[in-house]
Image (spheres, rainbow, N blue to C red):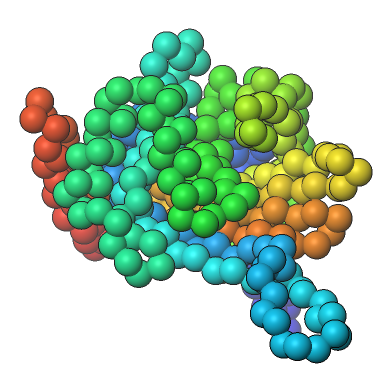
Length: 304
């Protein structure tokens, strides 16, 4: 009759042993962030951006001969953009921070350039390490009709390198689940806007401090998700930008972004949602001719 209680006790002990301390968790997170920082610039993938945005009513109003004025409503506009994607540092940057580089392949199913051309231009852009090149890549999005595009969120794990954590306040915030995994949640907040969100409005650039949540696997401290948001007032409107980034371990053994969901919210109304999805990342070796040689995926590990 005592066996059920004994079993429960053992399960509880096993669960307790599976938990690791906060110091161990943050140490594991910083190690994974360092591997991420080292290996992602050697990688290439294909990114698919699906955007849904509420746009102002069309100015065109067909004449119907009636004097009744039809009230035009905002339009929900959708686009899908596929790009070749990689990351790299910027020239003359003291911090050696990484930034996203991309070259558009297709927009709404229509080809813009060939895969080979996109990879060549992407390689030239990364090697130039020029911020002007990166800005031109972002301007492509506006040319194709996209609005409120958010970039570099896929790299937010870099906030949790050993150096990055020096600028964060991190506090435990309970437990939850992601799929089958029990996760520990930590609230985090930047102590300064110096490394915060960079927003471009016309010719002006503004940095805003971020805060959010870090989700790590309870068993071993592996980072699985990072959430971030910033709220501010602008022209008497309350603006909120928020993002949720899910990470997976690549076949090469380091974390890579699997998806990013970004939302731009004005006065509590969702205006734009950007969903970025990433194919599995491939490691590449670039030679002097600016061609890529794919490194083979490692063989699967067979557990005995």
